[in-house]
Image (tube, rainbow, N blue to C red):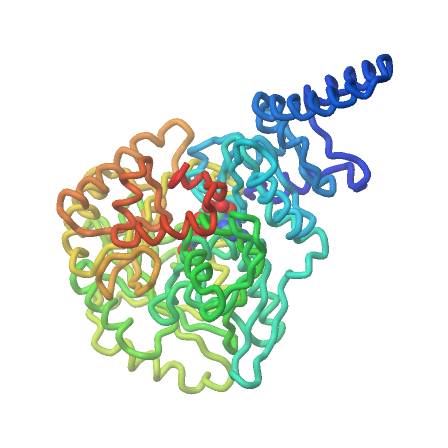
Amino acid sequence: MYTYTASVSSQLPTCSSPSHPPPHHSTPLCYSLIGVLIYMAKLYSPCYLIIFFIISHLVMSIIGNLHLKPYEVLSQLYIETSLIISADSDDATLATSTDFGKLVQEIPAAVLYPSSTDDIVKLVNFSNNGVSVPFGIAARGHGHSVRGQAMAPNGVVVVMNFLNNNNNINGIRVSWDPILGFGYADVGGEQLWVDVLHATLEYGLAPVSWTDYLYLSVGGTLSNAGISGQTFRYGPQINNVLEMDVITGKGEFMTCSKHTDSELFFAVLGGLGQFGIITRARIVLEKAPTTVKWVRVLYADFSKFTSDQEQLISIDGMDYVEGSLMMNQSPPNNWRSSFFSHSNQSKILSLISKYGIIYCLEMVKYYDDHTANTVDEELHKMMKGLNFLSGHIFKKETTFVDFLNRVKAGEIKLQSKGLWDVPHPWLNLFVPKSSIMGFNDGVFVDIILRQNKTTGPILVWDDRMSVVIPEEETFYCVGLLHSCGFKDCESLDVQNEEILNYCGKSDLKIKQYLPHYRTKEAWKNHFGKKWEVFEQRKSQFDPKMILSPGQKIFN
Ligand SMILES: Cc1cc2nc3c(=O)[nH]c(=O)nc-3n(C[C@H](O)[C@H](O)[C@H](O)COP(=O)(O)OP(=O)(O)OC[C@H]3O[C@@H](n4cnc5c(N)ncnc54)[C@H](O)[C@@H]3O)c2cc1C
């Protein structure tokens, strides 16, 4: 298993008494010089020596701040002993200098294990006002970014899940609003979605919009969008938030919603961590189903596959719609879900060898005891007229929880083979409906099938959402979820570049999801018309450009 959580908790600070400063590896130079000055003042008592001492103290502090390394400056900050000042080689800084992608390493100067949200407020205030050059601060949710987005080179990484260890008041609290007639959960930004699922199910409720994988933090996915096969129906996770507590880049603790401080609310949702650290989000809940009907159908013809997918999202009733590609290098069962039986896998493999690429449309209908009698008929009605390959329909029933948590089994399998903690040069793209045929010809068929390099599942699902998205009402999200060995990633990165170049040259008007760019120009281009607002919000909420430096937008 990916050991991030375990390695963090094994490094709990040992000096928990507030009366002791945190451990650090360097005695700031200015402190020892002050000691000498006090000694001189004792020897020569006239008061001008005291004035000399005060002035020297101030001068030395300033010189010290300017010349010390960031972690030495940070050692002057005292936050209830939970600020661990680490040298480059320390386990704490190493654990936070990498992520799920294993492609980037950026060493922070220090790691904060917050005992409360107040610690984070103090840290952000200290960067704003306590040092001559502000240092970067990155909230780390579960570190499942792939390009260093939750890192803080020479700054401070805040290990959000540490809030869990201190009876933090946020946690997960479930409420029911009798007037509005729906439930909601107040959830700490550090919470994992899988824990939100289990906590809300105790009340027979659940969030409506998910990600395919549940071991991601609420703050982490709300900083992007949070999308899966439910998005066409409920919008991304960022559309299902009623209110948030946020610590802005200026160190202010604010509660915001659509009606109160709405500028901050909209900035933070999908804001790539640039405007504030989410410490609480109020998430919409609905009555949870208990069971699901899960169906997959196969296509050899891409246009039939997409038009059926578009038909399914246009009717009312399906709870989840997603698609995927199957090729020799991207087999029917993969770590994201093992759906097909052994004999069905052989059947599909022979289809793949006949057609090269097979497209798989996946749909789910939720039900419970009250709807168990009618669910089959309803599903049948919704699927009427779909144009999949005759005889290639596969069905399964499972619990709601097992369906939502389907990727975990794949993770455990890969962990056991040592194939989870490997590099992941992923590329996620939003492709407008009008470009999807060109994308299939140029990318799936030409670049990917021809080069035979894909080593992971490829997902396709329709979407309508409000983060940076193509200017079309319907668009697809295509995830090229590669993994590779530590030495052979370069060719996949080259392929990613080739895909992006092809999309650019062919003017397919795609947008990256979980974006990664190397230049400000590229970021401006990504945001397009939204750039001006994004930049203006940055100067409003994080004028010293402290937050989420790993995204490399302003830093
Ligand atoms: C196996 C796997 C499956 C995935 N499946 C999906 C999927 O189905 N759908 C989908 O949408 N995404 C998916 N993702 C992508 C995932 O949503 C993002 O990478 C997300 O950011 C990861 O969450 P995290 O908690 O690990 O965030 P981190 O990687 O820790 O942080 C991501 C960014 O958010 C910032 N951040 C973290 N916490 C906070 C906070 N509390 N307040 C403000 N900013 C914060 C960080 O500074 C950083 O910039 C998947 C990723 C993996 C590895």
